[in-house]
Image (cartoon, rainbow, N blue to C red):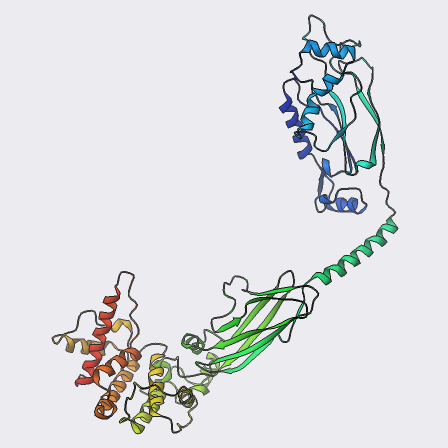
Length: 541
């Protein structure tokens, strides 16, 4: 494609900056709207610079060949007096004038017509003449002006070898105060054989596709669906995914969050590693672990969570892989509230998690089936029968495996085996500590220091403010520990120690505001411990 630009730039000998600015405006702002399809087709024909691809318009520099001509108004620099310029011009002594030509100076400095070319100035300045003559303007009644090469022809070629200037001269026409300039060029124009071009195009595209496919990272996953099966409370279950680099380049992978999310996965799921790099043929394992803690169990029991998630494994410069994770929660009484546990006489494992199925099986508006949860009654009854005299009861550590099986018995309704009483005691304190809602909420904490004068009033107010089911549980537990304390000589369990155990199991931690000091929080907890001690040592209940 060819572009011809004819301009008349700013006048006056001293206004070099104005001419440069005029050129810049025309060069950068001239745009030819020809449509994106036309641009792409012209490029496919090999006639336009590649950087115009995708535009709906082309600028001056996007053409294969640009001719720029006109009255560009560049003069001989003012460092040479006008009289000297006239003298040299009339004598056709041009070297000094060419050296001080403003356009040559500005082009050499890179301030105008970058990358353009111009032929040698082998003719006298073309301005300013007396119209109708071949004489420079020197009449007394006219303003004296220094002769200059105002009229110029320049060109810009994408392929410099495709343009050859055959001549560059001026005409001796005298109808104006300018002498017009002219030039003859020999230009090579590209011609495309469409059929051959299409063949080459298809071959090149096929090569590029092959190269691109070979350059893309590729991995294989031995599975993208992980079913963890039945997962129990306080249990961690781990599965693995094997990733193998099946491509020909290094594969970098990482797990990324889903859209509009921050975390890679749900809180009950952990993944390691979350990123890595594999050379071709190398493989690695990603470890995925589901852990049911108390918070997760509470959300599962209240139908605010399900054991389902999708992970996104992203290859750098490659595709995304979607990994589906599922599991089934084996429902447990741990992490539930006593208000819900008293509703069911069936083992809690048989109570559906799905609220619709649960509503079909049970009348959720019916009154509580029991005064206290059956699970609490079962474990306290077992301790009562097996070991009130056991030394270090409630202070010695139980066997973790036995505690797990005791929890399973509570959840499924199975009979207890001959478990160690310390394991039974630990299961009891763990059950109470992990209730979804503590028996004693923060709202029941004493707000004032407890002493002998006000403790009776505090205990009465404490019991009056408790809700029915937590009240029943609290009375039941206090009664049980009173019985335990009757055997203190043998089990070495004393009231102060029991009071601390009850605070740890039944009482939620006070969440003071920012101004509340740690000492104030400890004082409130100490008051609650005194209250528990009072219940244990007196007949307040």
